[in-house]
Length: 563
Image (cartoon, rainbow, N blue to C red; front, side, top):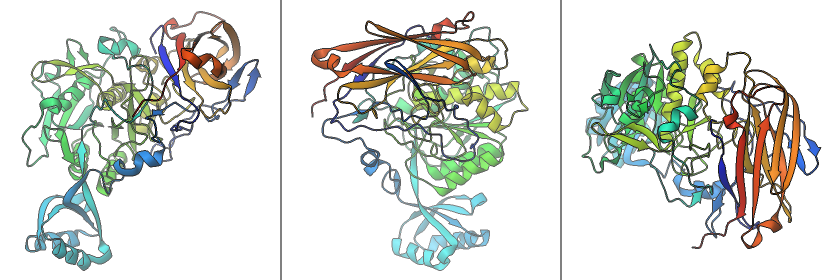
């Protein structure tokens, strides 16, 4: 993380307020089950500061409105159940056991109160609209247990919400603007490529005539058969903006993989709306047309089995699918980011803070820039784009660039290159807020360069599992972000006028270590604050990047918001 001072406000709530808890854990086993979790360490005590092990239960603070619980059950009550949210009325998907049953059904459908909308013959599936429910039920009875039956679901570009009841209480997110590439660790002289890589952008279309995308779009395929009139042009350039973050080269828009080609597959209309069945069809189309990566800056709350099968089809063909987790500010991610076999991307701001709008959950893999990103807009415009939609193409582009430089790497190997070289923010190791950490393209490019000695400050965050009437516990972390084992790392923590120096020995590459700082609650009453600063040095030689060696935080008591 290339910044000198990170100033955040850590807000402490009174003990009676309900909170969301995030437990340190690795992602569930799946297609990418070989994701790595940092090595666990032994807890030792150093005065008032404790060297803390990553297996401790470390929480991030989420605040809620007065009188409302932010437990997972409450948040999930209405919005996250696919049978209630995002369902398309009277529209269903049937998947038959055999091609013969599918064809038999198609031959009789016009006589039985059904309108056929589309088919996926790879899966013996049909999307349909029901005009007569009674006749439809009779048809289903004819096929007994030889057919799978589910609703179809709306798919949308993630909406940027600025007013949500469940909100991370941090200081205002800071936009990247024109600093996005330097903050990612890239320099003008760095080798940007993507040559020979085809990236499918499944969205609401890409304007190949935008100056940022001239000569970048190989082909566009439109799977939207009956497009609605544009209600609001806010989302009309969404796919164009996403593609420009990957391959763009115009004014302030600089893609990480400018030599890659875009395969635009239109699965959403100009309002940013589509459906899960069409999305599944688009994924199959992308794989069959030779895409190496698929970018999905979109999502739905509904689980469609055919969509999961399409993800599996991509994985079986060594095609990486990169997906946004959604912008609802909830502790649950949308589909298809929930599925195994995808890379689920959340968003952070220019200071490394989690974006308040971004969803969280155990499925989160990695965080990337998603606040105030320069991107292609309508006509020749440059816009500043925020959301997990903006974060996702950074990961896609990084994978494309690395794939072009290292074509011998498999999809799993490419993924681990990205996850093994992140900045570990939040709880040490994989956590539900940042996943493996924040994207660091510079460290990815330097990973095979020997002799780099670099330690960085990780994060300041609260352990709200710590139970005490008089004290709270703040966790301060540091990480070896170089390419060599560090014999010594000195972490200095200042709490107001008190200073502690903790020494770590033999710190392996990419390891994260942390210290627990005990703070007195009494200092926070009557508007009081506690200032915390930390710095790190390696003791035995020059530090490769001194811009990531310091962090400053202020701890204060925030009143509950009124109803």
